[in-house]
Image (cartoon, rainbow, N blue to C red; front, side, top):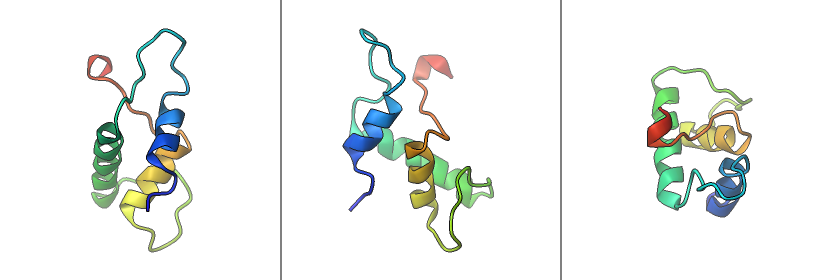
Length: 79
């Protein structure tokens, strides 16, 4: 089971969206794609942006980074 939950992650990612604007993340798919991309970056040698105990899997670190707002998901038009 994923902790935090998908709905918690979506709330964190969309927390800075102002009323009336479209949310950055509207589905679990976006969360999965963003965290898997970050996990691949960590596997390639990028340094974690959060304290990660030795042996913690890259995907878990990526989820923690997203939950702690150390990384953000940007829309296609913002790249």
